[in-house]
Image (tube, rainbow, N blue to C red):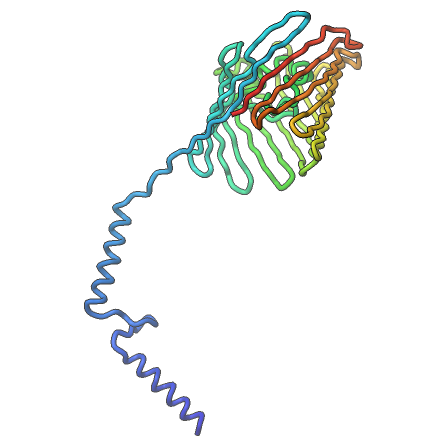
Length: 339
C-alpha cells in the first residue's frame, strides 16, 4: 500500500509539471511567455546582428628588434688596425601565432650585406619550415653568430673546409625542422651560391642536414652538406660531413668538432673555457690536414670580461702556422655591445 501511494504521488507531480504554463513539449525547460519571451528573443536577435556587423579585428604584427656591435683593435704581423667588425640589427616580426618574418643585415667596415631574410612557419607537432635567405644548418662553430662565439672570430676550420666561409655562410632555399624532446633534426635544399645571389649559376641545388641530441649539460651532433657550392673548384657533386660535441656545467665549457671535406681535407677543433663571475679565460687549438699531411695548426688563448650584462671585452692571442705555430701571431682586443 505504501508503494502504491508513493507511485501515485510521483505521477501526480509529473502531471502537474507537464500541465504547468509555458512547459515545452520538446524540451525540459519551461518557455518564457509574453513580454519576457519577447525581450529575450529581441536581445538574442540584436546580439546576432551585432556579431555579423562587427568584423573580427585583424592581428597587428609585433616586431622585436635586437642585435650587437663589435669593434676590433688588432695587431697582425706588427700592423695595428681598427675596424668595425660587425653591426647587426635583427628585426623579427610575428605576423600571426604561427608565422614569423626575420630580416637581418650586417653593416661593417667591409660594407653592407643582407644576411637573414626569411619567413618561418609553424606546422604543428613541433614541425616548422623556413624559406628565404638564412644560414643553413651545418656543424657547431659555423652555425653560431659572432656574438655567441667565446672567441672573437670563427675557427679556421670553417674557411679551410668550405673555402669561402663566412662569405657564403648564408644562402637561399628552404629548410624543415623537427624538435622531438632532446632531438633536433633539420634538412634543407639551397642554391649554394651564397647570399643575395638571384641566380643559381650552375643549376645544381645543394643539400644540408643536421641532427643534434641535447640535454641540459651535454650535446652531440652530426651534419651533412652536399653539392658544388657554385664554385669552379667543385666541378661535380661533393660531400662534406661533420661531428660535434659540447659539455657545459657550472661555468665549465668544453667543445670539439671535426669536418671532413672533399679532396681528403680534414679539420679538427677543440676549445675549453671556464666562467667565474664576470671573467672567462679560454684556450683552443686547431689542426688541418690534406691527404693526412698537416696543412695548418692554431693555438689560441683569451679572456672575456663583462663589465655589464650586455657588454663584453675580449682579448685574444692567436698563434698559427703550417707546422709548429711558425706563422705570425695575431692579437685582438674586441669591444662588444649587445642590444
